Image (tube, rainbow, N blue to C red; front, top):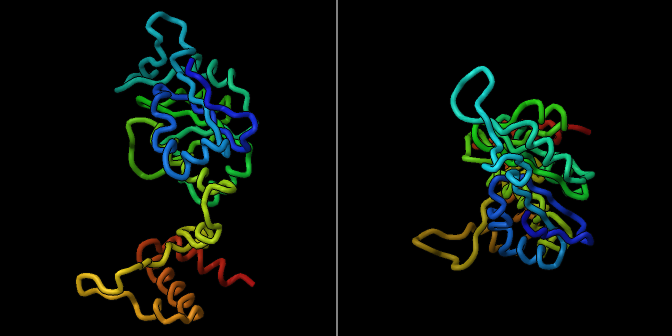
Length: 241
């Protein structure tokens, strides 16, 4: 079994069940997440599902009951793996049929001590495992990946960046897309003119009231055009007394 990357003093820990433990920490070993890992702000341990197989070929899958293409991860192997990991946090399964991951759910997850993530492969996971362990199925979008590892890294990244002391400025996190059910407003920086295109004058006016109003208007405009369902949610919350 791979060497653990867990520090029991870190406030947020993620256990990962995968057929490819070497995919972790992946991109999370770099930039802000990587620095936070070094500082023990978060930790992880990747378990190889094949370590729980019992035959010499380390088999973890079998053909679907009822016939069909592909292979399914076996209930007995996954059950043994899941039972071996002690966690008080939620147990997640990255799955294209899961509920879409939202910023709201991310915030809830970082208020836990951590979580366990099962990365699916092949045609999926035996449904009995999902039912028995009450796995929460989460999707990162309406498309299919080769496996749950990249989806798990995405979820972890969304959580880690919101942990205390990871991002330099709290304000930057408060003004990002989805924080207020709005997509983020456009950003500009120097030079003031590029390829004949200028920075909007309001942003160089020094009038912070006008700047705030412009940014809010732009966020509303972009959200209404690109994510009408999100804009309706924003309007409904805004209208509440």
